Amino acid sequence: MLRSTSQSTTGPTPPGCTTDSLAAAITAFRQTLTAGQVLTGEAAGADHTDPYAFTEDGFLPSAVVGPTSVEEVQDVVRIAGEHRVPLWTVSTGRNLGYGGAAPRVSGSVVVDLQRMNRVLEVNTECGYALVEPGVRFSDLYEHLRSNDYPLLMSVPDLGLGSLIGNTLERGFGYTPYGDHSTIQCGMEIVLADGDLVRTGMGAMDGNSAWSLYKGGFGPGHDSLMYQSNFGIVTKMGIWLMPQPEHVTVCMAKARDESDLAALVDTLRPLLIEGTIQSNAVVGNTLAVASMITDRRTWYDGAGAMPEEAIASICHALGLGRWNARFAVYGSKELVEARLTRVRSRFKGIRGLEFVTTEYAGDATADQVHPADRAQMGIPSTDLIRMAGWRGGTPAHTDFSLVCPPTGRDAVAQMQLIRKRVKGYGFDYAGGFTVNPRHAIALALVSFDRDSDDERAKVARMFPELISDAATAGYAPYRSHLAFMDTIADQYGFNDHANRRLNQRLKDALDPSGILSPGKQGIWPPLMR
Ligand code: ADP
Image 1 (cartoon, rainbow, N blue to C red):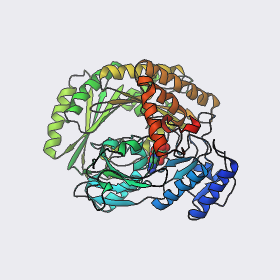
Image 2 (tube, protein in one colour):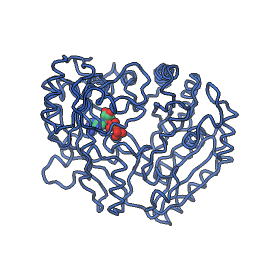
Image 3 (tube, rainbow, N blue to C red):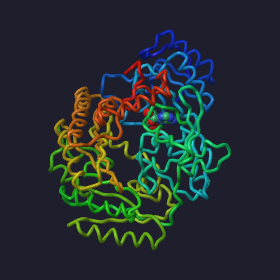
Image 4 (cartoon, protein in one colour):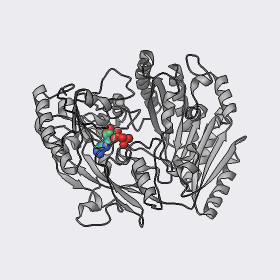
């Protein structure tokens, strides 16, 4: 929460900036923004450092500003440009596991957009919403329900974050509209010099297809804003699914550790042909268990949990060694037809248990099992429980590797992640989201934030994981602040032509290098 403060002490001074210029910028922010929207000193650090920090790097802000309008965002970038003070933009700063609201470069001023939190439009005829950065998934959900709009939204694992922050990080949910970058349409952007741009059809005054047609006339710019530091997004269109009559959530529980390949190879054709409309989340026993129980109930020893303990969890909680959750949507007839085809395909996996739960498309949170809420587009905070798996002060960081959606790739990725994670004495609580044309291996590594030993292990393990993955031809799609450069290094085709292109764009759009320096390994000249 942004709180009002009158503190004047600043935190670290960013590179390329003097204490005086930072102080002058902070004074100018205070004079320009409404009272209480500029935090410094301890108040700045309170909610804008990494809650799950594991390195000594700090990633500390010097100040936090909370603009309430597009004009104030423009003022902020102009002041920052004048004083050469780097900014770091967050929508609600809930990028948990990847650095939260903390800036890549210590001393940056965090631009926290949570006060710009209006749902500007909901269109039920064509199914879309236009939102500001501070609109959280839980806010849009409440908005849709309280107005009885017959629309189903997609939510990621944690409903506390914003639609814009999650979408820009290429986050995802679990309904047929779960790939958020593909359902995003049209943006409003403040550039580093304060200019205001609308993309796609929004570039034309009075055009009503801004949130409907991704094109426009000429090059598209929306994707330039993804995981980038080329602008600050102040509005975004997002498509919403018409509420289906019925939803059946399916859980396919595979008995053997070796069933992973068969599970993925069974899912892929069903996903590509569209019989299964949502992605499928395939979690191993510990990934599912860590959302409903804690480790010491089953095993309290050091090192990775032994096989016998995992087997007893499987048995006691009725889980598979691999558990695939997905849903089918539509009229009763369509859902039935989809299910018939899905069931017949899964018969090919020996010993697999197939469980289904039926819901009305307009089921409310209390009518839906907590584990099925994501497939029903209902925000929840259950995943946060995983961070407490190991006990101590809960913290986690995530490793997210992209691969083709094939059994062979899934097995290769699982083996390389499991080997490192277990080697460092952590439990492998992992799995995949399987989509029609890609899968993402996810390993959520939970650790005790108060343990020096565990934090040090996490810091050492991740670069090794990135290197193992690169050797096998894989790379993460998203990263904690600490590893952005290391991961950007892996995208090295033609002597890092991708980096050179990003730098040319950066230099053209933000010559003073004030917007989120270092984001995804994209640095301004001064810090290169
Ligand atoms: P969440 O929505 O989960 O709270 P954040 O607000 O932490 O996510 O945003 C995640 C990342 O996305 C930020 O670290 C930043 O790099 C980028 N980002 C977030 N909001 C914006 C925005 N409005 N404009 C540009 N980049 C943004």
